[in-house]
Image (cartoon, rainbow, N blue to C red; front, side, top):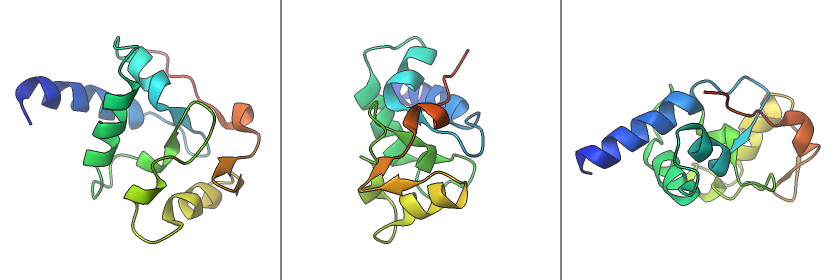
Length: 108
């Protein structure tokens, strides 16, 4: 990773660390919050690169429709879903139920 990517990833992680317990946000919302509104995919790459870091709640970042598109990056078959459900977020068929109710808009 080059220093430009490192800086981008760290800005993503700074926002992700702020996601409240029991809430989720989207890749695009994080991109917008750091001033890179068209970089949702890069946010996804950053989230994928942070696995194994306990200080970043990657399970709370989903796609704009509330789908668990990053779940295959978690150990086990349903770890992302289990983590969300342990925070009171219901998931059915990889879709967050009442997505708007659980959505957190980063305000940076």
